[in-house]
Every structure is written in C-alpha cells, then in structure tokens.
Image 1: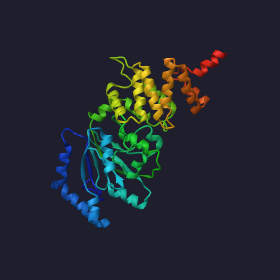
Image 2: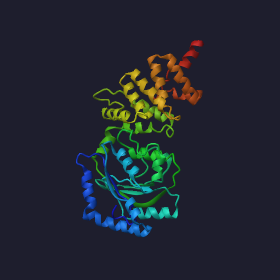
Image 3: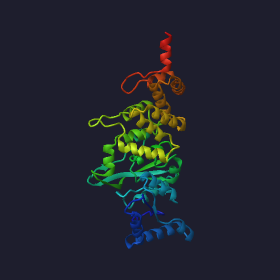
Image 4: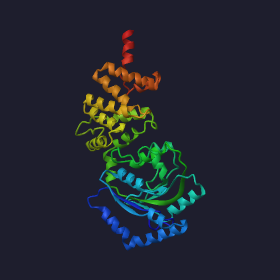
Length: 368
C-alpha cells in the first residue's frame, strides 16, 4: 500500500480483538522507518497534487483501531465507518496489490467520473499459482459464486447504500459474497482493469478453507438473506437441506453444531433482524421442537421485509404439523394472497416431490 503510485489518503488498520494485540505491532510498524518514510513521501505527494494544507493533513491520517472480537465483517464495518475518503479498498493479511493498482483505477475514474467500482484480475501465490481472470460483473454470475476479489475498489457511498454493509448477522464465512450481493441491488457503474494487479496468498489448510469444507450450510444461510434475488424453489431446496437432523456417525446435520452456536450469537446480537430468528427456527425444527420453531418463525415473519416470505412459509409448515388448524389457515391465506393460487400450488410441492398438506385443500376434499 505504501508503494502505490497513486497514494491512499489514509490507511486504517483494524485489529479484531486479537489475543496477541496485533494493534500494538501495527502502531509500531506505522512509525517505524520501513513504513513511516515512504508513507511521509506519499502524503507529501498528495499535498502537492491536491493543494492540501494543515486542515486536510489533520483530517486524513493513518490510524490503528482495536475492536472486540466479533469477526471480520464487524472489523471491516468499523474501519469503513471511520474512513474519511470517498473510496474504499479492504485488504486482509494475506492480500497484496500491485503498485499501479490505485493509479490505473483512478485514471478510469478521472475519465468516467460515474464509475463507482473498479476491480482487476487476481494472481494466487503461496501454495497455488492459479490466475483468476475475473469475469465481467453480472448479477446472474454473482448469484452463483462470489464475483469479485476482496481487493476491489468501490465508492464509500455504496456501503452506505446497503442495509448491512458487511453482514455481521451471517455466521462466519462468505462475508464478501454477501456484500457483493447487496451491491447487486444498487446502480453500479463497474470497470475492470484487465491486468493481474491483485494477489492472494492461498493456503490449502486455512481457517477459511476448512470452514468452507466443514460447513457447506453457510452458502444456504447466505442465500436466505436474499429472497428478492433467489427463486423461491431454490430457497425451498435450501430449507429442505438445512432442516436435516442428521444421524451420527454417518449423516451430518443440515446445520452443524459450530454454526448453531454462531446462529445463537447472531440472534442475540441482532434481535431486530428476521434472518437469525428464521435460522434458529430451523435449528429447533430439525431437533423436533416444533413449538419453539413456530415461535422463532413467527418472530422472523414479524420482522421480515415485504419481499421475504420465508418466516411466514415456515410458520405455516410448523403450525400445520402441530395441528393448529386455525393459525395454520391464517398463514396459508397470507401465502395464497402473496403468491396467488397457481404459485401456491407450485410451492406446496416439497423438495422430495411430496405435496404438502393444505388447510384449504383439505376443506375442498371434505366438501366433495
């Protein structure tokens, strides 16, 4: 970063409550000769380019922040909220960027001021030499995989335009992907620099890699945050998989114990979000506690935005299984009103092909 030919106005380092107190090391590095001298030259360059005086130099300054240990999403949000510049780039400890990256990005912005997101190809190093030729940013590809390197540059007002920034409610993993999906709802003017200007250290046995392997439910939970982007049927299949109770030692549950703990923390820290209550309801339903599941689903439905049908749908299923016909009928009527009769018939078909019970259908059969 301190070698960038277009210098950053500020560098913010966030220590996510590390027991080693990495923030102390970071402060020492910032004032040490190896970083302080080139950084001072960068600031002098900025002052010359932009005519900065004492006020600007005091406004933009490098800083080390220490936060409680609440995960990478929280740490990034703290840093971005504290940032004073118009452009943001996030770097983890295993990320590098070429010295011309910011310069080439800002050349594009100067030529097309409406540009609000710039990215480049990525070279792996460490235990892999793979080259990621990042495809053009499109909503359909973003729904399948995380579409961009973390080191993408974007205007800070995009972060303010999302409801959650880097989503802290999501159990750990795929925070970047969730952020890019939130950006898909906004008017983007992206630009790709078709060069390998970002680098990522790949380790086969890393915390992230192990998490992705051991907790395949995380992408399913992520998709449930975007019922406006994913088809109903896709999410119903995800529900079906998440609700699997598992039979030790051979069959793993749909939501593993480590993620169950994350969901509990998420529900505690984000009680006004609908998704943690939905996930907790699935945990309870998988354990066979339908009454506790119905309570969580009811809470989720009461907090959900208008486009999110999942809490209401799962509540209908739970109430039907509990035999609470009157309450189930109310939820079913709401779903029929939301989707219409034909779509409701489609979504009554479960992932395994079985047709789900319906109060309305039962009444019709009784009348014939």
